[in-house]
Length: 120
Image (cartoon, rainbow, N blue to C red):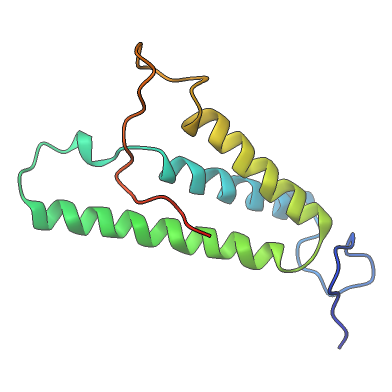
């Protein structure tokens, strides 16, 4: 079995991500990672139980990391289309959830996310 070490369009390879639905799934997963990276979930809870809130926060962190690693594995297929839709999903996600374009705060201050930033 031969694998590509450069980006290709997946022609003639055993690539599972060739149809539009799979590309849309990779796009949505990268969008979800950005959404989870820039939202505050715990502000909706009026619970003072730090253990419960910490477990909820840890659960969201695990989900975000699993989805981010699945996107990474998809990009490692070296298919240029998958790379393009993953970058497009992360870009749109940052525009919608992380940039100041749609910031609700009049002073321009961002709320801190409940999760630590993704580090590469």
